[in-house]
Every structure is written in C-alpha cells, then in structure tokens.
Image 1 (cartoon, rainbow, N blue to C red):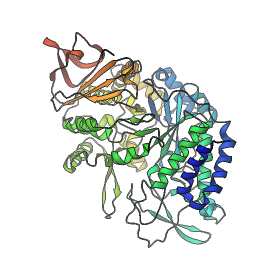
Image 2 (image 1 turned 120 degrees about the vertical axis):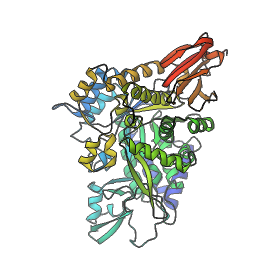
Image 3 (image 1 turned 180 degrees about the horizontal axis):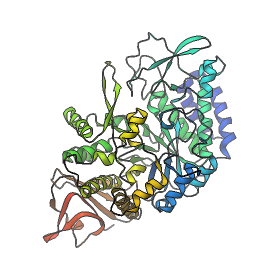
Image 4 (image 1 turned 60 degrees about the horizontal axis):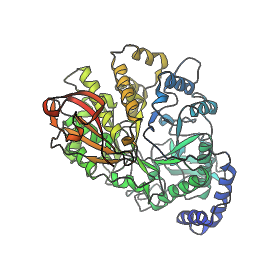
Length: 577
C-alpha cells in the first residue's frame, strides 16, 4: 500500500492518540497489513445509499430445514418470498463460532460456525443482497484461542486482556449490565481479575495494546474481503478503558473509529461503518465525528418513542423529538428501526420523557407479557436498561383481542419508521408479527430470548399459508409498504424532513422532500384509539396529491382526511422547482 502523505498524517494522528510515542512503529505495521489485504477487498461503490436501501436483521440460523445449512435456507426463503427484490441489505447477526449470547461471545472471528453454514453460503447470499457483518470488537469469548493462551501464560496473549485489582475503585465506570465488572480467572500466574463488561463469558480486549488493534484490523479487512458492505461496530462505546473515567465514549474510542474509517475509505471505498451505541441521542450522534467517523448511527430513541406514542395515544414527545432532530452531516445518515435482536433501550429516552412516563411505559410492556433487563448505575443501584418484548406483542392491547386492529397498529408503527429520513432496518420477526417467545425464555433463562425465536422453515411457511393469519397479514402489509417506498425519490435517506403541525396530539405528521425532483411526501399516522379527522394543506388534499399508501383512511367532504385508530397514509405531491 502506498498511501498519500495526507493519509499517513491522519493515520498517525489517530495512532498517537492511542499509543503516544509508539505510533510511528504501529503505523508501519498498519500500512503493511492494509497492503496485504487491499487486493482482496471488494471494489469501491460510487453511491452511498438511496431509497431502495432497506436492511433486514436476521440470525444466520433464523430458519432451519432438514440437512440444508441455515444460511442456505435463509437465502432461499428470502428469494422465494420475493424479499430480495424489496430488501437490499441483509444484516446477518454474528455467524461465527460462539460460546454464548447468541453469537456475541465470539470464539473464532475467521470462520463460519459450521452449524450455520460456510463462507460459500455467505458468498451466495452476497450474490443476491448486500451484507452487513458484526465486528464484535469490545470482547471475545473465554473459549477464544487468545484467552486460552492468556490463561496459559503464553506471550503475546498475556497482554490481550485487561486485569485489575479486585479492590480497585471502579465506581465511575458506566455499566450496561448489572453483572460484576471483574471476573476472577485462574491463570498460570495465579488468580487474575479480568474486565468483563457484558458477561463472565465475554472478556474485554485490551485495545491499549497495539497487537490487539492489528488483530482486529485483520478481522475487519477479512470481513470486507468476504463481501461485507457495512461493518457494524458492536458495543463500540465501551472499547477503551481508563481508570478514574466513565470508560465510555473516550477520545481513544473515537480515534479507533476514525482510524477504521480512514483505512476503509482508502482501501475499500463505499464500505460503510455503523456504530452501535445504545445511549442518549447526543452521545449517540457523537460517533459521526466531523463526518469522519461512522457513516451511519442508529436512531436509538425511535423505538421507545414510537411505543410511547401508541401506548399513550399521544404523539407529542415523538413529534417534539422529530422537530428538533438535526439532519445528519453530508455523507452520513441514520439507521431507523423499531425492533432488533436486542430489547428496546431506555437510556435513549433520557431528557426526552419524564421519569413517570418511562415508568408507565415499563408497566405497559410488563402488562403485555414483556420483561426487563437492568444495568448498574454509578451509585450502585440497578435501573431498567431495556424492555425485552416482541414489538408486535408490545403494540397489543391486553383488554382487547381485536386482531385486525392489532395488525393495523403494528403496521402503522412500521410505517412511521419507514417514512423517516435515513435508512430503515427491519427485524426478521417484524416481517411476520412474531409474538413474545415466553417458552424460549423459560428454556434459556435469558430475557432477550423473548424476541429471538428461531423457526423451522416449514413451520413459518405454514403460518403464512392462511392469508387471514396475523403473520400473513403483517407480511402482506410490509411488502406493500416496501414496494412503494423504494420507488419514491422523497424517501431517499438524504431527502429533507420536516414535521407538519396539525394541532392534534394523536397525529404523527412528517413531510419528506426530494430537492432534485421536487417530490414531497406527507406521512401521517393516528395513534389514538378513536378516529381522527383533519384538514390537510391543499397540496396534500385529494385534488392535488397522489395516494401512495393507505391503511384505515378515507377522504371526507371538503378534503378532510379521516384516520381510523392506527390508520395512516403516505400522500405525494410535487412542488415547483
């Protein structure tokens, strides 16, 4: 690799932040490694994203069928259901050998778990969709070769993990869990207490050691060579540890993200970085940097705010947040979602909802069969960190088992997400309205299992066989929205977004505008339990606007739009340019 002087200077700046006087020697190693991988990495793309970019989040073993590998079964199912025509990007959750946490305790970064498939299966998937891989870089499994060598006292692995005095004051450390931060392990040198931010089976890597950086850059480059278009940096916020600090969002962590961005832009342009930081919004968007860190960040405030709007029949907090939401910098965007393999995080609601309203949200989810997970605060107390629930079950009504309204409410929530500026991401279970998997929770003892059900392929097909079943209705509704959405210039991730105040607390009203075509789309949704009638601006009335998508909505006299409970519409018009 022959980098420009400018690139070398930028890389050296990042490495100096990390390793001080050792930056120069580390730079030589980084450049040599990049040079070794450069030819194998995918050629660059001209575009970043467009309206057709939709992400599907799924486990590699989401579907199983006889002796066929789960990855092959997943590919064939998506193709046969016509979903590869509607969804351009597949986020395959960690598909590597792992010892726990449904793949996030990686014991081998470089091979596909043979119980899931092979790199050949991954290549075949890459032939029909773009791929997103997880780079699980904060920690690895206790079963990983590196940690086993650490336990045996073998160099250089004795420096790959973070030891601490068991009596050290670590009260300032921001915790995402309630489990102990330090876990004792018996090593060749005696008992050592090792950092385990997420669980006793997930040991934190020591990024203060340049060898760890080089190991993980090798993994990053190999993932790109295997076809990843997007790299998701899992739990990146907690990467760098420094005693007497909160150990979250440290400047060294941002330097690592910037370093990876520089290397990917140089070696594999068009490969995108997504940071996973389930924290309050202002902290979350800090990973855009100055447009030189992540290309994409999650909209973590969106899932709980949408739930709050529908469960309280009041969209005021959601609309207030949307009104003050800053557009992403050029060359960056948001990833919008309502559900994922994790629960619905509550930290992103800080400063957005009063405490009593958050408590009410927690109570409503528990009433719908959901669970909660906690984290330990710096004062030593535990607080609810996330809601563990199927998003479909979360939008049910325990007092009313009207399936038609339940399906409409769920699809209306998805329509809100799909209409927002950014790239939409859809969890596999959201395509089918999968309910809470309480049996799975009993089987594993883990709250997050409630939203991680795995299917036999034929079992899912049988659920879809009846067009009146909730899974079939949800899938049909989702197909319709995705087909319409991908054809609209105003739904480009970069198209402008404004809120339209219609002075009704139950209405979510967003206007998207394409600057090149002049297309404007009004997305309107009713979260109330009763019909709402509203007069729209003339441009969006029945005489001027085209109806792109319509659910539980009718036009009345004088151009009044009436929306049933959980009714919604996307209305399109064109302004003069």
